[in-house]
Image (cartoon, rainbow, N blue to C red; front, side, top):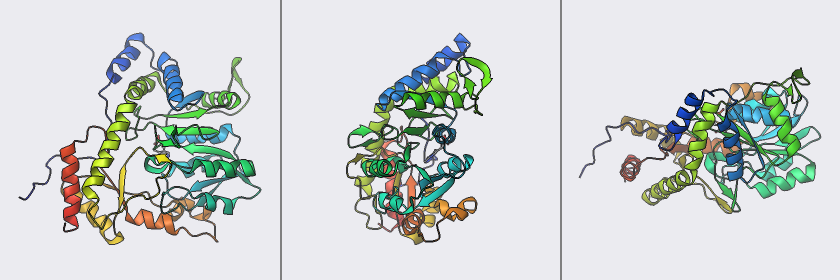
Length: 373
Ligand SMILES: *Cc1c(COP(=O)(O)O)cnc(C)c1O
């Protein structure tokens, strides 16, 4: 029997706001606290940090400024170099550029799609100050190897956890493997506050520095005295209210996302044209977006084929080094075959809490049908 294409549009991602979001938001309005000076901000910081086994959380207005704030708090500045992966969202490289430091872009590995620790070693020099591993699409990086390198060369590590809330590396939730970890709570992320972000750290001095820089560089003892140039990167009570409600549902979100990925895998695993990430050893990923690799010649036409059937899918990020603002930062003796390969072949399928089993079946069926299966 010929199955009918879906009439309903299925987006690649959408938030699930079925917990206490509305109740907590209503509290903000009723209590008249809508700026960053409300009780939910502290509570969200403490609970989210606690969930990630970190001591301190500093909530901010989005994930990009979380990265900038982290770099600024660690003193990264012009003349410094920061190592980042070629395959990530542009916010990672932009945050480095805001500080005046030079991003040093390295390739990812083909198996994990994440930054390759061996490639990190190759680019370290006396100007190198920090490494930003990105847990791409919810798959943790090889944090032991990265931390060993950081210790050996005296470098900071800032984890970009924007796509990996609740993912585990060696059975520990990501976020606690670095000097500062940065999260995004944009509407398509695993935990959302609409727009929002957070820095986590275990060091008290770093925590104090993050808080001061988040709030205009205000001296904690004298609120109109500024010792440094800071920013206004604060999160509002309204955002934190949503975040707190989301956090209460995080275990459920993670379970649902795992079920979605398992179902896609079981429906697509006989398709010889599709491959997945192969190296997931020692990590428990949380599928932020369920992402597959297909032959390069098919990728864009498959996206079109699905979109004609009301199914949104997205290509994998473009390699950072190929885009105009970042071209000048590619090292001349460095090639990026892996990120190029993945970005030409990768596509993400709808992955969100609330995606129904029948929809996953229909999407998988359409993907298989595209390949004549
Ligand atoms: C989403 C994202 C960010 C930025 O988060 P915003 O909240 O959108 O500013 C940073 N890094 C990665 C890898 C992301 O996916």
